Length: 464
Image 1 (cartoon, rainbow, N blue to C red):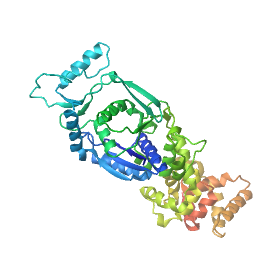
Image 2: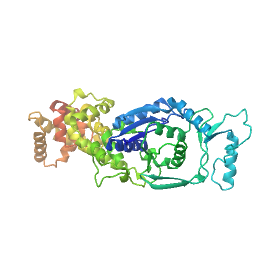
Image 3: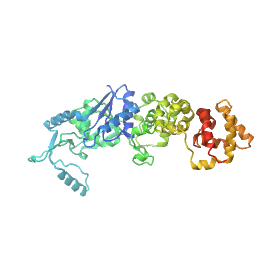
C-alpha cells in the first residue's frame, strides 16, 4: 500500500500556525513512508472563500518548502461528482430529501434546548409520506444508522466509540446543490485514495459522521490521526497576540523558513531531546505515535531561540540575499557601504531575526543622528579633547581593529581615563547608537574615511 496523505485547507483566511503544522505532519508522514502528499483546496464556502486566501496558503506552503505531489485540487470543480453520489444514495434509500425550513429547524432547536436536550435534527422527513411543499428547495440528508456504534482507532488518541443515537441525519447537499464539508471531504479522500487522514482534533466529532457515509458507500476507511490544537503561552486558545498570525507574517518579520518548520515540528511532537534538526532528520524520525495527546503551547521565546540558532549556522553569503530587502526598506544604499557579508558576520550572533539583523546594520549604510539625550551625555568638552586627539592618531595608523583598539587604549592611558570614557562617545558619534559590537570592529568595517568623517562632523557640533 502506498501511503497517501493530504492537506485540505479552506481558503477563507491566511495559512496560520495550526494549519501549517498539520500540513507539516501530513507531509512528513508521506515522505517518511515514500508516499504521496496531496494538496486540496476546500472552497465550497463561496461567501468566505477568496482567491487572495488561496494564494496566501500556496505562498505559505512554498515558503516553508512543504512541497506537494498532486494538486491543488478544488472542490468547486467537482460539484457534479458530489451530486451524482448523492443521487446514488437517494436511489438506494440511504438518503432522503428534507424540506424543513430554517424557521422550522430553529423552532426545533429552541424546544430541544428548553427541554435540556442536545440540539439535533429530529428526522421528520426521514420516512415521511407528506406531500413536499412546492416553495421549498430541499436538502439531501443521510439516513444515519439508528442504533449501534461507530468505532475507530485514532492513531494519536487511541480507541474512540460514538453511539449512532448521538448522531443525527446530517445534510449531504444543501438546497443549492453545494455539498457540506462532511460529505465533500469524504468523497475527496475516497477518490484521491487517501490512506491516512491527519488533521486537527477539532475534526474528531466529524469523523463518526464521515465513517457512516463511507459505510453507506461500502468504501474502505482511511486511518485517522487527530492532532491536538496549539494553545497560547497562557494556556488559552491561540490568538494573534500569542502567535496566531499568517505564516507569511513570520516570513515578513524575518524568520527563516527552516527555523519555523523546525519549531512547528517540535510543537506536540518530539524525538528524544533533539531541539535542532534538519528536514531530512525530521522525515527519518517522524512517527505519529510520538505526537502528544495533549495540546501544545506556542512559545515565542523558543521560536526566537531556534531562529537565532539557524541564523548563526547560515552562511553569510546566503544571508546577504535575505537581509537586503529589509535594509532597502530602511533606505539603505548597500553599494555605498561596507561589505554586507562582513557586516552580517559581525552582527548575526547578536540578533534573533533577519529584521533585527537589518535594524542592527542600518548605521553601516546610513548615518544616524544621535538622540538629544545622547548628545547631552556625550558631546562634552572632555569628549572634544579626547576624540580630537584620537582622530589625529587614527589618520596615521594601519586601518584594522587591532590597531584601532590600541590607539583608543593609548589615548585612555595618556589622559588617565577608563576605556568607556572614549569608547562610548566614539560609538555614539560613529553609529548614532550605544548598543553595537566592539567599536574597533565597527570602525574597521566603516572604513577610515567614513568613520573619521562621521566623528569629525559630530565633534564640530560641540561648543569650544
